[in-house]
Length: 147
Image: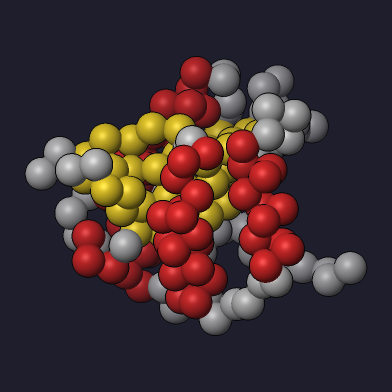
């Protein structure tokens, strides 16, 4: 089973929407249709700092990831933030998530980023088993102020 990773295209919207909703459901989150549409438009806009890759198996999109770039006061070059990663449950454990992370890593290297990073919930043991194969957990804690 070969996994092909590529950039998101406009014709991917229907399948992306299914996977996006799966991701939101997994995190017990609801977003308005307007926010989902705004996210979609941002991912395709050359003027917005949000990007997406899809993973395909036999011409079916089975995984998505979203990422962006940020500057840093601590590094000469910036960072790449992998914001969202979701694999169709029927394809988990087949290398889809790993392929998406590796592809974002390649993008980060090509853009001369000094760090690729992401977050997940402590309780997301399935994803953490994959992520722990890439690197050690950061000693940082994330704090949030809702605005």
